[in-house]
Image 1 (cartoon, rainbow, N blue to C red):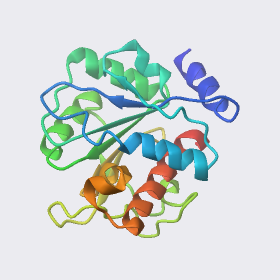
Image 2: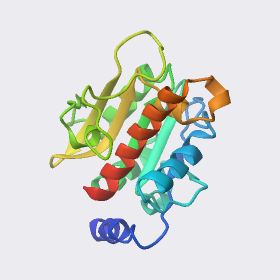
Image 3: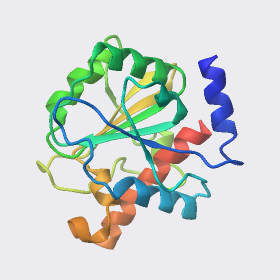
Length: 212
């Protein structure tokens, strides 16, 4: 039933407005960081890849039944993350039913979030996503994979994923900070070309969700 629900939700995307959401998690991390990032990504996608996403993203808690209403849920922050048993069960059901979770390390989240991802899928390891994956191919080409948006520790940007039956259901972007690149220009003073790369990669993520 849940998979049918998501199938209907996704296939109606071309005809009706959809909503996406920001995950409000526990543990003390600033889940509310980058307040302008999702609205800007939505505007970019609606203008450039013909999506019809409502301009104001929702906020949803990981244990809420409302989670199933959103085909795309974004998560960010700098600090600690704790998923309760109820959070874990609901997130797992959501992802198995066809939902998609994008976790964007805003710097400092890595040591915490990997443990929590493992709670959700203890038998599925995070694997690095190769640059040949469709998420890097369309509608914008990223031949080298995930773009580097912010310096952080100077490491190369990496995209990790959890795959269920070959389908990517959870994307974890590390040493990249797409969300900062989606923010209003004056927030981080990123050059236009850097912000454009971040928004194009975000559009690829949205496109992947609704075409796969």
